Image (tube, rainbow, N blue to C red):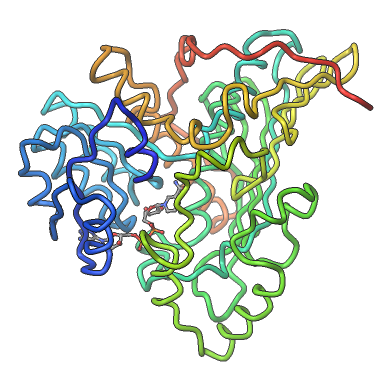
Length: 399
Ligand SMILES: NC(=O)c1ccc[n+]([C@@H]2O[C@H](COP(=O)([O-])OP(=O)(O)OC[C@H]3O[C@@H](n4cnc5c(N)ncnc54)[C@H](O)[C@@H]3O)[C@@H](O)[C@H]2O)c1
């Protein structure tokens, strides 16, 4: 997120905090004008800091968000918003008491292609939404992990880390009000004591179904179905083989591999490369999203969205028009700015994030108890969300 923050003229990157000295040093080198702190408490005591992006390990999200909120800072908190609903309630209470904004980010529901799908659904041109399906096969379990990421009790594993993405997108597309979840999770790699698999059937209040699936074990990759996406993989298929061998023989230097992807590391993805031009859509971790409506379907295309209707297939171009790429990672920063400066509502509110976490927890509980779990704290996405987003006109496509 740092390159994205730094690229926005509306924002000033004034400070960062981390307990890791290497990361602090690399941050200082890249952003010499910003202050660097070794604790969240110091960061929150800086009067120049108006808003804090909480991106620490999952078990600390609540503690760090509450600390910032108590200091009168607005907060964007990474997913999962917290690791219990009690923590969510503490965060909601702190935001309300101190009169500051709390945004539950940084899920794929902020991405432009998902928001464009919602716009098509809400336009009514395909009739009512009848089903949402999101399927993903990735190498998530082969990525380097810290010890806390390998502990399910601290929010480690696919259901904690990827559940919020898929569930948030399902909720955004279906309106928000889930009724029940029947799900399961799976952990079947001895070297990784966390779940690498999730799948769930979610039902909205009006009976509309949704399914989600994420298999992170890195054999089949969803990207194979979208050939242009293979080049964007974090690891090549050959590297998957090598990593799996290193994990099984316990010879992998996990800390070094993880640090390589952090700020300033050899494989830092540093998405600041705007100059590289617009990039096609790829399934990334979220996976392929398929929406079924009464009179048609919607799915991603390389260039934007395919909309299938009674007159055939049309395409809504998004790449290079509204700009899939860095622009779409500004979702919660725009929402924060609009709320603080322009007085607009927060849409991905703490209540919204709490509802997504509730469904995530329900998926895990359902897997343990092998039954449907009913939900009680769902909230709708207000109809005026994204009212300023205008899609380009759709065009005919070949085939
Ligand atoms: N939205 C997304 O797509 C996405 C992607 C990756 C990670 N995340 C989220 O970001 C968070 C971090 O994940 P990561 O992969 O970047 O892990 P990471 O280990 O690279 O980052 C966590 C950082 O927090 C620091 N930290 C730990 N304890 C701290 C403390 N007490 N005070 C201050 N800093 C502390 C660590 O030193 C580390 O630099 C997780 O919540 C994860 O779910 C979100």
